[in-house]
Image 1 (cartoon, protein in one colour):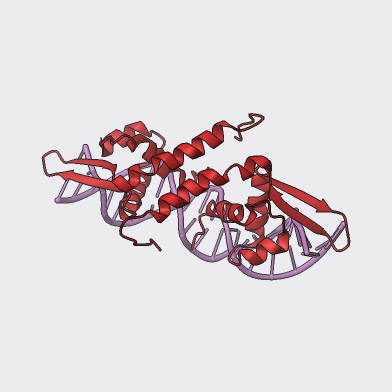
Image 2 (spheres, rainbow over the protein chains, first blue to last red; image 1 turned 45 degrees about the vertical axis):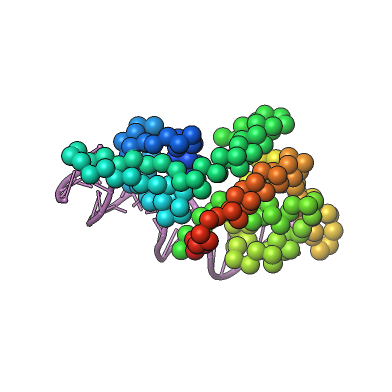
Length: 96
Length: 96
DNA sequence: CGGCATCCACACGGATACTG
DNA sequence: CAGTATCCGTGTGGATGCCG
């Protein structure tokens, strides 16, 4: 089944809100159903969009941390508005 | 090139905000790059989600009008929050 | 006018293997 | 660990044609 690509960006965002810095492997573990190909692709796109920062620590073993830019963090209120809307749904039929 | 399916729902929403009722052909003309298969599919999904209403006028020639439910209209503030966020983008590189 | 049915190309994304 | 490279099956969505 199709995974609707775009949804992952939201999942990643929610994991990164609050200024958390997560390593690549942290995100892999936090989002078990994502392939690492998909994960890196989404991260790269969000980085190109100026939403995500990529911090490379030059070590052995390698360590890369992902976080949100100020611009990315500022999405939080807007997404909360959507959450609020979603929770207000009248006759609660979730749509599977 | 892929059209990323989900984006159309937003486009349709924006055309329907303000309580406007639009005919199928109105929407087709308002969104030139959408195929009618895609258009009807998105409308049906939004109808199933309780966001869109479908008003059939039994006439010759046929006439069907689409509008938003109260629930759909209530999305407006949340999307405005997103718009506001998008307009506040720092160094204005639009991402084509 | 407002659809539904059919066909099919090809872009998407999963799995796997390899590298710095 | 944090990716890149390659292969390949699948489902999406555009195009076309027909109907009520």
